[in-house]
Length: 154
Image (tube, rainbow, N blue to C red; front, side, top):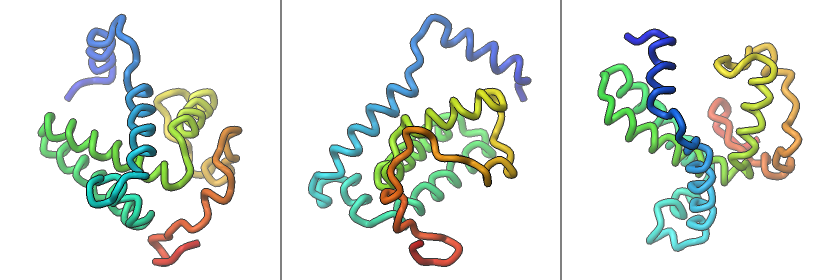
């Protein structure tokens, strides 16, 4: 198993002088997902997923996250990469249906980095006190979310 220092060294070596592609890739994916959402569900997987609603999209995110975990534990690097890409796709589809944009998530990540550092998860006690990001989607975009605990929409 690699130490953090070794992992960072490999990442810096691999990406030295290269532009950061992930945010651009996610932004392009988000744009494509929004455009595909208007397509015929018979010919577009994205449109079909959007038509099936937030519960189906949330289920797909959970399924893909489980597949990512399984591939990580099994040590199947290439499969882990593919499943990670599937997870990101399904997450972006869910964001689009929820009225979120990648920038909303980037803003939250920036906020957390300022408070806790880049490699820290928001502590649970602070997560309960969280205030919406300045660019957060309007409240109406958050209405009608399905709750897995209650099995109904909020």
